[in-house]
Length: 302
Image (tube, one colour):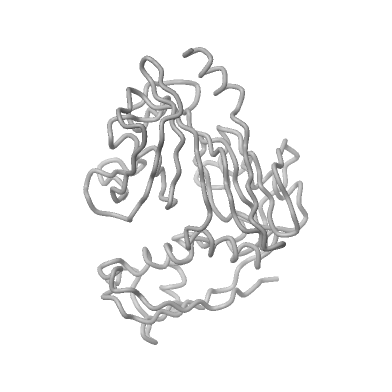
């Protein structure tokens, strides 16, 4: 059995002129993967001014885009009886405390032991909007990042949460330990982020081009060779906090990919997330306690 998602219509702002069609649609429809959106464009499910278009089409601003999502296959991620810490749940949303070292959903080389495998074991019904391998997944955390992550119980909840992410009304706060002495007590980083053409596993903020990104930070505590930060993000780009902090000369501790010294894990934790529950219409604030391993790390620095 398959499900059909409702169509979406957008008018491209002049400010988005020059963006590729698939990039623009991923910003507007973050609940769908880039590959799924590209497939729909190629299959004629995404029309620009009423006509089919190429994935790489450069937008000029002012275009009318209609996306009629193709059929979504049912869930088929295999359930696995593994631990799952629930921070909050209602009829629409589940907030999970994701441990470090676990990927959110299946991908290259990761077909079991994921957060999704745990979710489908513990919950009989999850949203299908993200596809058969990403049931309930509205947003992601990197494998090495721990903390609060939202899961949608049904398609309506998924779309409501995705709209909040797209509208930047969900507040996401992280805790990060970075190398060096961050001079300012607080700061704001707005450098665009794109994939590193030389190393495809990395992102970069060095080129001056890419997707817009917003990271704000304030110092919580200072150590001899490290600074402990509270970080808020206004966008959700891949590796955003890691890339932005490294770009100002302060890579996250343990983050070897972006210049940090090797450690058992990276010191990045999704501490708090605030959102409007689609079930109640009320604002919900969820907090994931700092893991014991990171508490010990701070204690050792003291």
